[in-house]
Image (cartoon, rainbow, N blue to C red):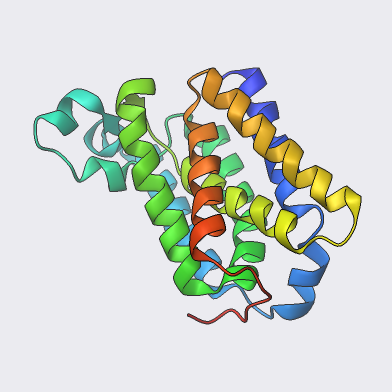
Length: 204
């Protein structure tokens, strides 16, 4: 991911959490699911730092996946193609987005958006980015769902504007064949169709 892509990702995250973070913090004591999955992602990062061959074994590789190694569409969410710096960035962003999404949607929908969005985006990535790895596409699906949440529930112009801007950035990323844009739109579509957005306790 290039510099423009990184800035776009940060902007989308800011738009998705900027207007709901305080409310989520008041409603939620401990985001257990977010912390648990972030710990697993961090463990995957540590594992590949100790055993660098794990990235080649478990990362996204379109040729290997087409040859039958379909497990890679899931395992690639637990290793990082940008190694230490990229991994730390992804774990941090996952916690930032995930804790709010867990409070907003509950653990069941959180899981469906995170893993469903992640796997569907991995399939898109077979054409757009055949080689890679990282959980950014999974938490960006959560960010997309939060953008739609903001649009549905906002009672003032500012949060609605944030939601629109975030989705527009995602569309622009798709025009650059950036898989993160696709991840955001998949999460947004799930929230628009499957969720009657309302404050939810952090339970499935």
